[in-house]
Amino acid sequence: MSSATPTSGTPPVRRLSLTGVLRLRRPSEIWFKPALSSVAAVAPPNLLLLALGRLDLAMYTMAGSLCALYAHNRPYAARARTLAWVVLGMIGGLAVALVTASLTRDAVVLVTVGALLAAVQKALCDATRVGPPGNVVLTFISSAALFVPQSLGQIPGHLALAAAAGVWAWLVGMAPAPVRPHGPERRATAQALNAAAAYAAAHGTGADEDHAPARAAGYAAVQAAWQTLLALPTTGARAATRHALERLVVRAEVALAAPADTDPERLRAWAHALRGAGRIPRTGDAPADTDELLGVDAELAARPVPLWRRVGPLAPIAARTALGCALAGYASLALGIGRPYWALVTAAALYQANLTLTWSRAVQRVVGNLAGVLLFAAIAPLAHLGQALLVLCCLALNFGAEALITRNYWLGSVCVTPMALLVTEFAGYQATGDLMTERAVDTVVGALVGFLAAVVVTNRRAGNRVEQAVTAADRARERAARLLAEPAPAPGALEAARRGLAVALTDLRATADGAAGEWWGRALPQERVVLAERSGHRTLAEAVRRQAVRPDRGAGTRTEDVRP
Image (cartoon, rainbow, N blue to C red; front, side):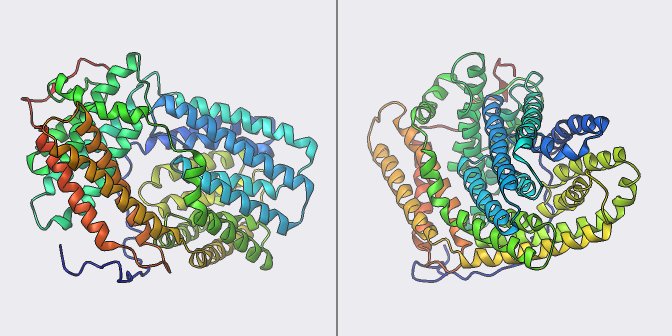
């Protein structure tokens, strides 16, 4: 390791960069699924309202329909629960917004309530790890609803529309289950295998620290696969598939711990075999694999962390969101903009795990929204030819947003912005120039004020969390080292300790990366992090060699007799 590694007494250098912020990534492997789900969830309610001549009610049905954007990476049993909670959360936020709108028309009060709602939605989405699109869609709906004239008598009917559309969105999200019931877990396992193969292929070329990002990405993919598999039923017909996939994830984890003993092509072959609906590859001797899975059983038996403990560390992010959204909305009001919720939502969309990532998202948001305003200018004349064309243009933009957003956030925003502008015209056409001006101003105001709020509200807990993560990693390593020193540890004990150490090291890297992007905090214990990671990964490799587990055991790529 270079001697230039910063120590705990050396304040890290933090700077904001534009390098790579707008760079396009490869599209998601399943980019078309959320895109098609979005169209399938939004189209029937909107077309029905069009036929009834009540497109002015589309905002309420879209509140439920947009829930179909969530949980595409989860197994179907877990997806059913997640989508149900998203629908309930969406309706809850909408209900608060509608009741508030019916009780007051004071714009300052409305912005304040919207900011508080945005903070709660941000904290809950991050704590539950609901996944993309996170809190942004929830905040968009609740903030827009605050500025729609409302009476208490109308609220039950409007909530019923949202609930009906939410049920339809739930059905759309669950629709692929009969066709490919094990698709999400197979994809997660394949991603873990490919990530481990990438690290194993790069290992041995250059210095070890040069491959740290690949190793961290590999462990993150493995942990994501474990979380996916642990959400599956432990008994019944699906359990056989779960156990077969667990053995493959174990091989990916072992490959990360001992890359020199790994054949990357075999891992890639297993990953390729998981595509489609073929049989699941077999890794080796089932009895040997059974002992390795004892660590999985221990994790299944562990009690989940209570929600309040997960929300606590997110208090600084929630405070940033509340302050930034409120100030952005107030600034928009001061400028005389008629829709301050646009500035509020822009601010809410910025806040990421740390200030550096928030800066990147701010740049992406501004670029994407301003480009989207120009696209709206080109689309508006066509959309204004009739309400049917207006609905069809919104559906096309809805598909484009979900198809492109995995390439980079700004690219998806190019479609989201004109779609949001067209939705405002469901109740009646408006002056294109005025809409464009208001949206452009609100975007810049929301991004500027929102980012300044992030600079002011610092996450002083970040350093403490790094210290805690280092301590947890050291303890996990010591436990594994003690078992390695025993001539005959209890069956499954070493495997459970190895998996616990892998989890601790993954959490350490994620925590350190998040804290490194914060400003104004105390210097991080960089030297302790480096030493903990180095010694931890060495212990992982020793555990692998002790168990004599090799990813190249057996000949050829055999398959389990397990159908998806």
